[in-house]
Image 1: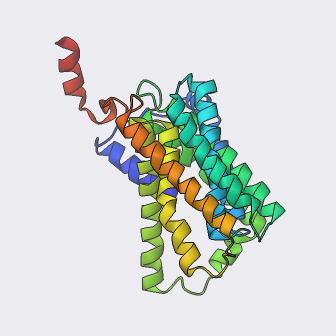
Image 2: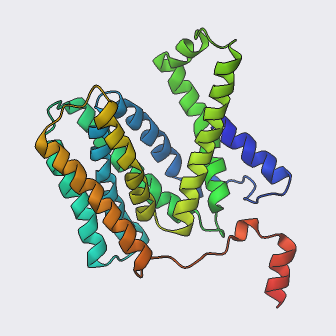
Length: 279
């Protein structure tokens, strides 16, 4: 969060990017994104620690139909039957795989489904708030981090995480510090690329892209992970789930859901905007 704040604020000062200055309407415009953001991270970390990597990857697919449902309700979007079928193919595979999970963990399942809800809501509301006439994509990233950095800092103190972090023995290790700072930078790039994907496409497409990306994670976990317990149904479910994600990708690229190219108004110099308005 601190990396996000520093990078975006310095970029704004140097007129590389634009987003609104703070005023009393910003919290109203941003709500409920900060709450969804922190809920997404906390539930995600909690579920990851309690499930095997392949099963975590499969159960995260339930984010996709939740995102579709919220886009229809909140953003009033409409999708073709083929898109809906591909989404439910992903869910069918997830049901088959989860139903045969030999390492069932109720607490882990609860956390991962909470994570699915937070992720879906966060994606849809991020899409809604990114209107250049409102906060814009940079404003969403910047103010989200600003509003949540202090509450999450307080949470880390109350849980004891901050104390454990300060007592970590490698803070004087240059290699560790370099890797830590790089992880912060890559975390910012991950959030930025996710927001960009939603800006130019849809929240649903961003969610499915993340699911397709997890194909490699699931199979690497199966081949090299020690916590995966093999069963035929589980493996079949994984493949159906991944196949549905690939199907959605091709339908989106080839079909009418493929978005028109948007003009990135936030990166257009003010002089150019004035000239376009006059013309």
